Length: 468
Length: 161
Image 1 (cartoon, helix red, strand yellow):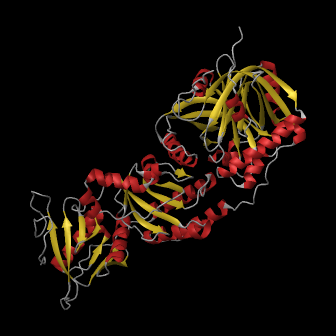
Image 2 (cartoon, each protein chain N blue to C red; image 1 turned 180 degrees about the vertical axis):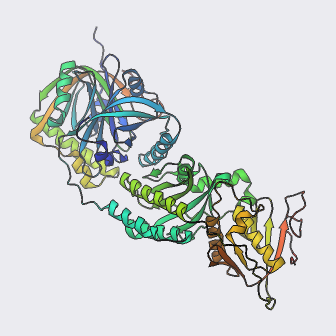
Image 3 (cartoon, each protein chain N blue to C red; image 1 turned 120 degrees about the vertical axis):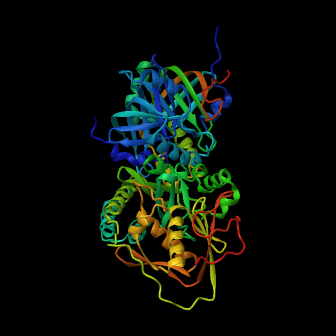
């Protein structure tokens, strides 16, 4: 191995200047072509995009040898790589990473719909030669390491989950200049992610969902690896993915219970990083930009460290357990003049306040329990522990993530109305503040009676009745 | 009986228009070698291509091509993506003549403008095309076959003679 290491020339692999590849057939007849993508795997390996079964492909399979010329997009320095072919991957994390990046490169090259990844060809880097020639001076580089260190130190001081999410996004803005970012938590049982914090968007999109495998975020969650796109591509756009999803699940209900995803309309760079916890993807840290080439390999490394630290902090944060379930009862107060209809659909635990969608899933089940007990028993204080133990809420056994769902619910309520709020009132405890008279309606799936509380069986009853 | 080569007037005009030119040959150890050329002179009557390139950047490639005689060169136009690959033999490394130096200046200027239109900054495009006129060499060869390499259906097909 030469002294030059592939780590030192990773910028050449960003796809800004197309690489060139030379191969020979078994008789030594050369072939040369342009290469869409050379992907950094590790300090000793790269992967090349296999898109067409062409002469290059046949030569590689016959001789397992390639010479590749890559060019630094900042200095225009050229490097020759001597590569030994090891094999091809047609699925899995490496394939998905390259597929996403190729989609961006295809858009940049005007080749959307033409470039399609058939495989990731893995090569060992045998040597790297710096090609003599004129170059531009490298510009001074910002220290990503120093910014990463400060960011990790800052978020290490957080003591609550909501604070941890917000601090992470705030530090990404102040230390890295990243304006558009969000944190999503994984609901592994439903194979979906839900937004718990965002920054830099017109609407927060708290509670909006992304399915595993959809777009940059969904592929990142499914594969458990960072997915990065350096140029705009409609292939990984959320608008289309969400529209497709809505179409599949039936437009009317999907559109009624869909919180718009807050992402940029026309992102030119996107980077999604898995937040790992207990050998599974617990969430995704996502950043994007209106500028192309905003996130490079070094940015990916820095943010991967931060996402990893975020995951560690989430795991280290103790479950907030109050000693005993609380049963505080609201002091007798004059009946509020105004009322609010809270409608619960058993089919998916979706909740509507009057006719406005609030939340669904586990967070919806939690909310329904709170308002029911508030209405029936006058309770205002609750503990995390009782929620965790309640079989009706159906928290996943090994990945319950209760605190994240409470953050989600608290934020949705804060954005929605103001007449119902959730506030912490001690370790592992929170209070439900209600300033209107609640009219609860529990709607069973079509053809089934509701089995919890009073029932209105009409799909969308016009008038409910108070649950006393 | 003489067979007409693949180089015609249309291809010659294309090759001399200021393009991305990538060259490959087989080294003495059997490994492929890749390099860039700056300009081209196409002689249709003689069925001969002259590739002008930086001598320092391509010393090993020049020597290997002259030794083996076999060479491949791909001409690509950013923007349109039109790409043609020539394969041939009788490769010969030569000293650059004043006409070669003039062609290198003209064609790299044209290529620089194409790169700017394709989205490169003027600074990057100029750096990509920068070369030392006193440090040029020529690799000439006789193309035997030409192939379409424009991405998409038909890529890799031999061009009709």
